Amino acid sequence: QVHLVESGGGSVQSGGSLRLSCAASGSSFSIDAMGWYRQAPGLQRELVASITRSEITYVTDSLKGRFTISRDNAKNTVYLQMNSLKPEDSAVYYCYTFDEITNRIDFGRGTQVTVSS
Image 1 (spheres, rainbow, N blue to C red):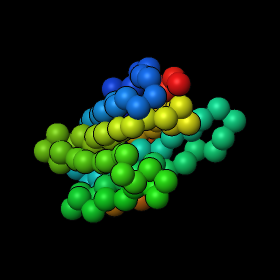
Image 2: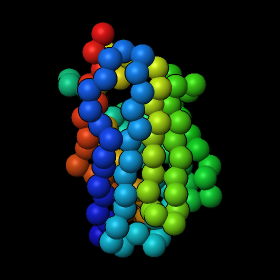
Image 3: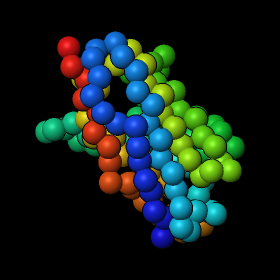
Image 4: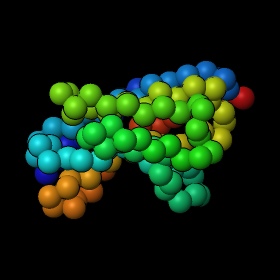
């Protein structure tokens, strides 16, 4: 089983930046994709961004230009750089991993991001 530890959330004013990190440990040798979902109160969880081991990236269209995903395979860590933050970006951000052998998806416990206007 993969253990995910997220960090970097917090409170910031509109227009500010945050960098989220997520380190994977445990049965992490066969992780392919890593990425982030977010969930705001009363809304469904939505995919924010993902990156494969070969560093093919995806960022949801509405966040392109503000959010960037990157990865350090040696550290089994994925990062989400969030710039020009808006109040509507406020949510709990969940790291996830996809195991290419088991097809298992694991989620972290989430980190809160709050953007004030």
